[in-house]
Length: 203
Length: 269
Image (cartoon, rainbow over all chains, first blue to last red; front, top):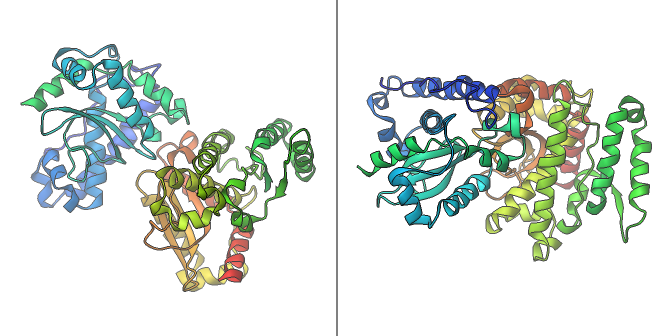
């Protein structure tokens, strides 16, 4: 099997004060780990076990709910940790910066769109910046652990940035104040990484 | 549970909060406190009506006349099953926001004149804000009411008989209910409900703020027992351990209220 539970690329307290150390530790060692364990248990001994996550997602509508929920949870969190950084924030750089300006006119306008997607996702879910089949950028949100790679998604594409808006991602520090968590997120975005994912998605 | 006109809601809550600070003394005189709330809320405002919460019958009112009810106990009353801070934020922020957003969403529309349960029965054709906020408002009222300090134990009377008849035993019922609560992925609710057609009890879980009265559900019924499994219901105390929260819930279930709902269901169906 080629699935891995990734180590966090920084310390649990590295994203303070925007995301607190306890939240990071529980999020990574409990939530993310549980998705990984349950996903492995769900695909073990099936034909899915030799496939890549992206391939599995492309036909997720035919897979059991345990594969969709836990596979999504595994993939989404792995991406999420990578696009955060203690040295993040600021404005985007590289090709993705130009693409954002081309699509939305300005970084601020893009942020507004992304914030809306994150704030208006009712219940548990994710907000996404993704690259569609037309190679254009797209902002959307998905419920629960779904993502734009899944064939059930209404804006299909390759995610290059994701924001977890499950309450477990922010409740210990922000409680019902999801918008404050979303604002704080922008101080952590690892734009180098997002740009790297963008260039990879274009290929 | 007292029911207070919405523009006086904050005032009643203020009194309730003051009550929390004074804790046990005032809690012992809760009826007096509520009477005080009614009385004071009636002053200085035009056409303020206060109504005593009478359970499900209240829901027959036009949606626009629905009131945001006071919490029927203090924030710390469910401790240690549910901690005071969780109750406070859950009731005063989450629940109140659903109520306010629901009233805003129906105001000035034909929906304002319709009872909330009849909106649920045709929810698929209504705006999503009605579904989410109407559900959020309604579900939480049931949730707060079907818990109480010193609750728990087992049901009695007709409800107990119906549970045994449907599930085989009380234990088997709790196991099925726990499964529904545990396996609801993401945000949602677990329910014990009664089917008006067959009179049978059934267990369900719903996503987000949906409930068994909504025509978007495969099986419809009258909710008898509600358990909120959104992370906001338990995360401050239990974090990822939803199962521990579900276990603790049984120690605060208000079976008298669940029985009252069941009897009301039998009376009408």
